[in-house]
Length: 119
Image (spheres, rainbow, N blue to C red):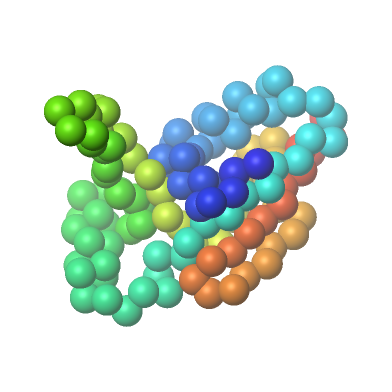
């Protein structure tokens, strides 16, 4: 279960494919992934659109964000989180051991259900 926009934990296109294959290697036949994400392109805010443009120029996916968590004097290392459209997710999943079998959208949020392909 990757709810609460946690499909973003896929980080970027390359890591997503690697991570999905790692899950496939330890999953049982018929395994499922259910996850949600925010489609970053449903925002018309100028700051969001400018961030998308900067990412594209840097060779990153438009909805890829770099974040870290801070609490008082403590901070995590910087890490990537990925907001992607349903079409981008489909592109990321293509060529992996997973397939998207259901997609539901209520802009800007969407949910997907993926199943492990048969060997």
